[in-house]
Amino acid sequence: MSEAEVLYKIQAIDLGVEETERTLQDTTSKLGETDELIEARKQLRDVEERLLNTHKALREAEDELEDLAAKIKPLEIKLYGGQVKNPKELSALEKDVEIYKKKKGKVEDQTLDLMAEIEELQDRVQATRAETRAVEAAWQREQDELKQEKERLETRLADLRGERGSLAATVSPNSLQTYEGLRRTRRGRGIARVEQNTCQGCRVALPMNEVQRARNSRELAFCGSCGRIIWVGR
Ligand SMILES: [Zn+2]
Image (tube, rainbow, N blue to C red):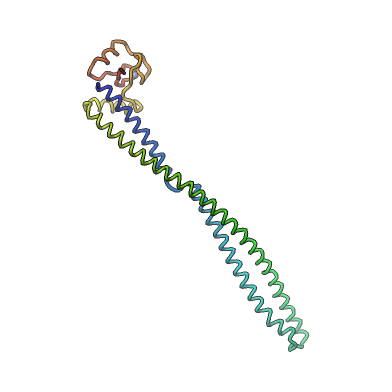
């Protein structure tokens, strides 16, 4: 193999390395929790918290009902027990009982509303939990695939670098340096193939004698137009 041919192979590897690195970066950036997963978990937490708070509100309402019942009972005993004869005092007692009963009625209504809300929230928690589990399962599958892909790409990179190292050892350091320098200044391509007497790097036709010389010489030859090393493909 001529040096130009080896350099052409090295370039193919370098381009492959770059592309694989880009894909690897893209794959790595997708690892970790997704917005969809975070949002699904948040929604579940929110609805679970609402259920908890509603349970708490119900317990408080039930405590209040007990308190009210405990207040009404002795007042009614007094009112209907016959010990109190004074009409003014009786009327005041009656008023108190009435106020407490009205309050109790309100709290009873609240209790019913809270119980209905709890039932609805329990359904929602169940549905949201199922949805979240589905999102988590899909996410986990995707993560597993991404991890496999990452490993595959890392192996590929290591293979390519190994291959490049073996090839690079067969060309002179000077030629390699020339190639690398051109690659930096010519959009990643320091060497171009010549096909039908045309440089594939810049699409300019080369004089026949230059193509001949490039084919036969052991020295590196360059495109007069774009300055890249040229390899006259076999
Ligand atoms: Zn050219």
